[in-house]
Length: 121
Image (cartoon, rainbow, N blue to C red; front, top):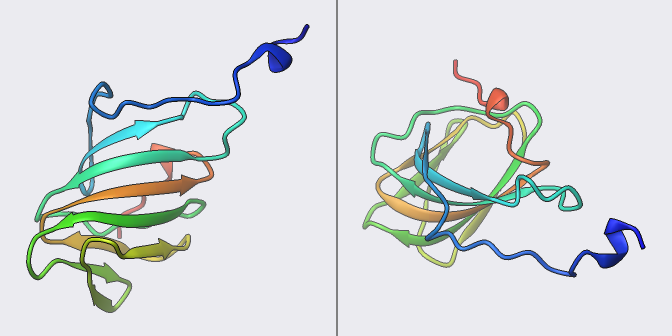
């Protein structure tokens, strides 16, 4: 049997067990980067009030807002959008973005997250 046939049909990520890494937004915990047959990564990110505006040339990010402080917003190019728990925003490559205000978000990144694809003006 090949490894693909004997591989289990699921993967588990316990974000409480994943080390956080600093990112332009705050601290991210990233899952499934090492899963070869999954095309993306899933992040839980604690966003600080001083997130840096940045963009990606290849990556599409979809934010799902888990927790937000009052008045939290996303800057998307020249627009500012109020956000609240339960909302989601899909951010295409080339869109400058940052979070304004403290929040906790689940982010789906396609293709897999690559720190070399974080760009700053």
